[in-house]
Image (cartoon, rainbow, N blue to C red; front, side, top):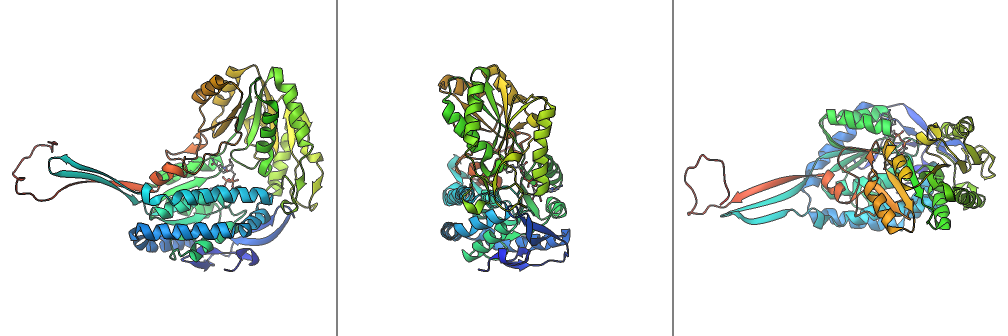
Length: 502
Ligand code: NAD
């Protein structure tokens, strides 16, 4: 297998091989820790996407008709290869995304869990059978693939998010065109090549690179049956509306602004550890990052001091050097995140730790911003309202439980939320009252295990189906119900009435 990261241009992967397409347009792919473009990526035209969709459509009949045993065996091989070679993938993630190697390994581990869950496919694809539902009549239902599936993924999990979807889509007999983020495209090619090494027939998993032009071509292509999208809320909304209007099944996961409510009876050391881990892991570029700590007034000073003390020990720098936190994805994004520190001052919040002053163990040209802590953030401030998607942790002081729940529920987002308390009754009430899709009780990043489904509420998910877990198999299959009677001399005769069961 050639290492895609060694080529100058990351090309598409279509019909089981690298493919250049017609487009002359490319975009730079940076190593964010070095601040320089290491390679570029081909940007597909709509026609290029059409070629990839045609390859997936051509592969569909044979793959949809392949036995459960064949698809299961592929997944087993894929899981073994991915597990054996995960370090290669981790180094690609660090080189293009910037996340530290340990975090890249964590991302792959969560992706592997979905592959392992997809291995339950013989069981999950079983239909149901009702014998003698009416006299002499059996009724059964079966699950069939939906067809060619388009997957569009964000920059922040270049391996895990594709792995949320394509193993399940393929297990269910669909074929796939994956459009990863143009900012860190190599992981998708690496996964597609690995799938080929694991025995996946050509055309079942294709990768096209590009931006809005490629996405629009997928959303409107008549041969695409379903779209799985993950990205920011405005684009998720657009993807949902456009693809639905073109008759497709759509799940579009959007942005987030996750709160963590800390009650006075919480273990404050546990809460401070959790806030730091979930606020600054992956430089805050996680849709499940904690970005707001809601601290009840009576313990807020103490909690802020504990968080700040922990932050003093964090090392920001090149993800290959054993640091805790890497760079941001682009210079523009780094600058946009840093501006929120000025906004905080204008809005009379208190900047407790300013990440612009952090020492960095990395190349001076990298897209660095150290971890920042802002206390007494007013809820009218953009620091509170916006999804910052960087290493900026806000503290909002609340009067108590009800005030905290009100703030959580008045957010337009509903991805993740956490409560820290030792009061089981309060935790139970919280879980029942919040309008959020994923809830942690003394757990800061409540990403469900692969056999439960992942997804938020409100502006964090457009469509009915969450990602992976049982929702994943439901999304990538459609059901047929069959009512069957085999000829029996005791039946027959003319009856124009609506069929009744007897
Ligand atoms: P993004 O919305 O900019 O991009 C996501 C995908 O959409 C990419 O493949 C990109 O090429 C494409 N895209 C970008 N602009 C487009 C346009 N105008 N029209 C059509 N397609 C377009 O998101 P991002 O910056 O790559 O990722 C970060 C965002 O993703 C954050 O908002 C984060 O919360 C969200 N996210 C959500 C989840 C979740 O599960 N809810 C998971 C990961 C990331």
